Image (cartoon, rainbow, N blue to C red):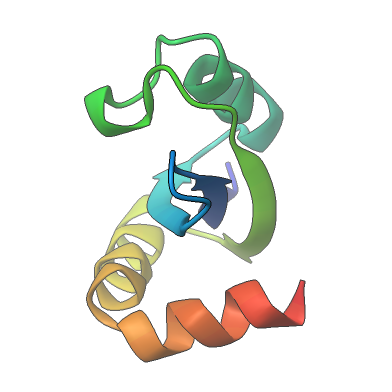
Length: 83
């Protein structure tokens, strides 16, 4: 089963971009959960847009890369600007 690391963004009250990184086996379903208030607690109540994802063959590989992307704010900014 393939796994994906994804980056989603939204804007806060001050029109500032907020990003969130996660991993999943089904991107469409996961994005729907985030936007319907049933995703991660941090993402509830906001409208999220998928801006980046990458496919991995194993869950452990996806988790390792999710962790790296969560910690690398410069890369996250680059990925957001590309979109």
